[in-house]
Image (cartoon, rainbow, N blue to C red):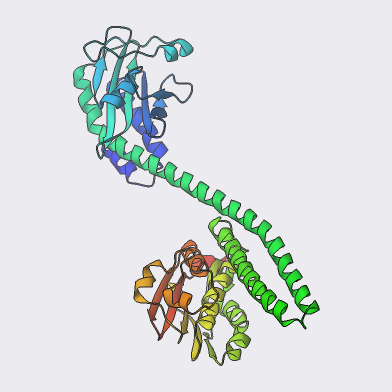
Length: 403
């Protein structure tokens, strides 16, 4: 039991723990076959996830009284059956013994012991041992199995969580890929429509009534293209696939290059742009295109939502983190909006009221990327006074730097 406990909370995989447990069950009871089943909630079935003995393949059985393990899960009851081909009226008149496994494996089951593995009041699975010869099981054999069943239930619980998490991640990636393909197909007709409107505007520039209406159409198409591009970026991010090459980069160089792209736009609004970089390299291992997206989103938002004042970008590091700060003197974010700020398609109330074009996707993508890179994202903001976003990304270790 102590060995199982150490493995359960150590670095050994869940499957290995369950397999080891089935071996322990077999040893304790001197059983010819020991099987651990996990409950499949969606189909109300039991599936064997670990076994020892003459078992050729995984077994799936319904949770009902048509099998002994199924009855054990249904009734949440431990029991010993001295003769699997005998009378079960003392347990439940409706119980049946499923002989199909015996027939396939040319085996004659004699005595069976079943114990439910229960965690938080829910049957996570069943522990079953079977003999065809040798010493028969006794009621007293239930006690050692019930002693280890909580550990088995705990392992089965985490196995289910892992499976559900893997399924959710898979669905999330599939959804992201579907959105990417869908929006990519949408981009072409929207871009073509935008080009046609521009052509008609140029041709009919003398007709003020028509050009006024077409200008509105052009503006709407520009907004739609912006939304399409942002959704494409977000879909690529949520797919989990790298956006570019993953390698060791100097963030000082990349920060300077991206910063320069927004100087002209800021100066056109009368804003002051300031960049502070260290005189040493800030080296991290990262998907560089992802870093550029983080930086460009935060700088562009600073320029977009600041009507006067400045946008300052600084980069530094401490012993553990590369620290990127983007501070502006813009409209800031209302206190009540902060909890939802990094949710897809959410825009702060003052941003919506300003009529500044935006999609509410950029910051959600920033949060997703920072988390993917093992970083932290912080926000200091006050409405009408400005905002400061702080991105912390892990520096490379000395061992990585030597590679």
